[in-house]
Length: 228
Image (cartoon, rainbow, N blue to C red; front, top):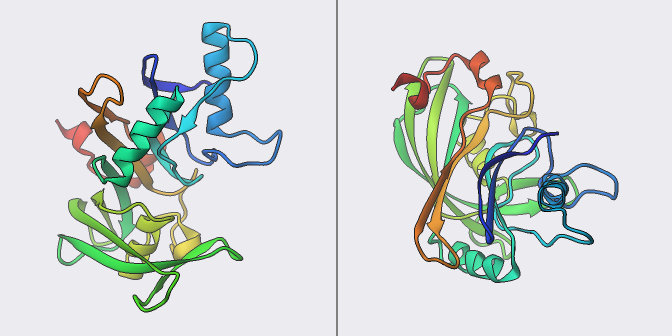
């Protein structure tokens, strides 16, 4: 595959992850975005031996969009500190079933992982292994059958957007794991639109934006980038 690079310097690599490609953590010989990024660096800079890259923003395999990679351990450490302090601005687009009421708002839930079934469930705050999950959303385009949402994450829980939207009755289109009845290929209609942070070495503000994938044309939604 050809890696779609949004930005690179000696410290950072920002790329666009395609649908169905795992970020990392796959069995030996299986493709992942991390492996593809390492191959890209080795080819471009003719680097022998192992290449260090640190994933600092993961995306689920069916999700598309901007993904941030550190090229040095120093950059990885400083970026992870920004994530822990919630100083990173992450924006997602999602196309969900139905029309949300109200058209903008905040979702607050408690989530717990089900490792056996590789799912996440909404739980009560009293459960000891549950974590608070917060996101805000606003509707960008709405029809009776579906809505395009812009989502801001306040926390970064596993499957958070997918679970919270499904819990409020509006699963992401194509996300069968969490209740969608509408097909969508490839992957699901969830896209990491942008990420904003401070450069880990220079300190200047950075923002990277990933265009919506071509597969979204089949959804017939009015994307802000297409309208203006």
